[in-house]
Image (cartoon, rainbow, N blue to C red; front, side, top):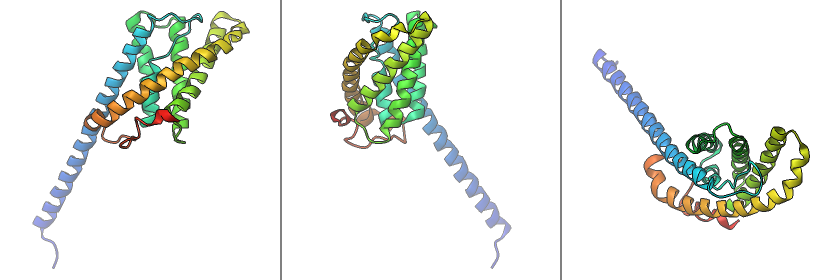
Length: 211
């Protein structure tokens, strides 16, 4: 027995309803994702502004504590979102602190972006927060020195590299600690409301600092 015109109409209507529902769900998830990343960008930008109050021994350099948020995202979510937040917090933080396009902005921007790429890549191999932060800090400082060398027109700035490595270990350890604490709070309590497809699983975010 074949389908009647009414059956075809009901089937088509049901299919349209399913598509509309999927579109609504995708839109809702997109809004949640943007909201969640916006909150983390605001948090990282706040760290960026506050760390300007702390003097750094190397000209144009930065402590980079705002990168703890990027580290958390690179470890628990992935490359794209980490890159977005790293770029956005550098731009917003520099605008709020009146340092946009200054030498410190350029060194911080390129350093943070480079570190986010390295941390996101290594996170695929299940490295812990401390290992990711150490490698990210190393790359961040190396890129900062390259930018400083370009700005001042001299390669003698690389004489500061040993000092930068030591300072990077300090800031990297602090970033790993901050990221582990934030990861435990954010991904265990709030990401379910804002971010539907998180990478983190129960109990993982707070434990990565151990390796």
